[in-house]
Length: 94
Image (tube, rainbow, N blue to C red; front, side):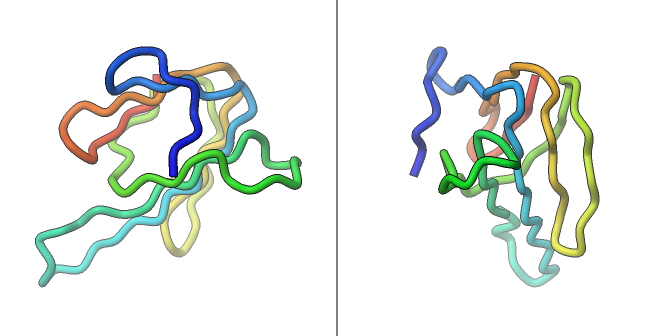
């Protein structure tokens, strides 16, 4: 499910208060280390997620607060940003 506005091929627009919940998966016996990225429009909104993507979040280069959790991290954006897919299932926020 991906209902983010597309900017170009492999790039999507994220709203300025988006919350990206990253579930990391690190199992040493599994070559598929993809996690799950769940993207919400805003942390305070009572709405379902805007997108859910399999993959890993490699880098955040945008104004954001990053909070560690037992299963990964939460990225709380403070400005409009772009979600980019470089390699397959490898994402960055710029």
